[in-house]
Image (cartoon, rainbow, N blue to C red):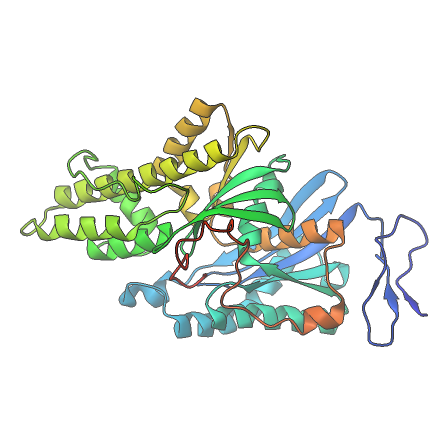
Length: 392
């Protein structure tokens, strides 16, 4: 049997049959060192990053992201066809820039990690196809990554966070509570039964006449507003469990806005502040229920990830909750809460370190997925489909 890339020294990852002829791949250098390029294109951000890990040292050598806000501004939301075309136009240049910034070349890489779902299928196809082409052209391993796993593990890229932990994933496409026991070991405790938090922010901003993306616009308007002026309902207050519901808050906001003739700037600010406060309180309440369900030997660390985790009011609410229950709260830096290539590269490294990588013939044949749940729900606890947006 042929042996490919056998190093002169250094420990080896357990061999895996990779090629149709049965030859075996061995890690080309010591197990403690990894260099991975990550590609992200699941929605409207085209991103690439290069991460190096050597022993306990983690280094983000480059991280390049280009948004598409200008292309979607006239539509009040992301248009899938426009997003896909923009990814096609930009991804080669983004990858080239990420490599140039890192000071490395394709030949230096150990693997290419790419978002393979869930997300807008056109964008996912662009990123995954590009990663496959790079892997084939340069003889590198390909790691298809679940976008949600990228968010779930991103905190470990910048912080020393051990397993297990409770994850509140709040993004444009998801609002979930997940018990993270290890890489690939996830248990969903709760999910949204209608809108995701980011989706609710975007639609509410549009309703109030604010620009996109909605989350930052709502937060900016809320800074000048009175959060106590409007008494919005408390979703699922009488329902057990950890699931979320945000459609009712969005409806309450619309009704309150329609009741005001020619709303002024201060009216808009008060509506934004009241809506943001109610949404943050709902996230905190359901997260506290999840904490309670895991008491008694369960995790004592709360991790918050996803683009909505950048919201200051939500961070303050969750910090107060964690402090009251004597839990550790860890949130990645704001730039790594939103979609980025670094979290995809990091998820690839996490899997490489454990040998959780499929043979090449399987990864090259991996089909992009519009839907790809990170974790199955606890039996009997699923209330609804969980998500209606682009990253279900």
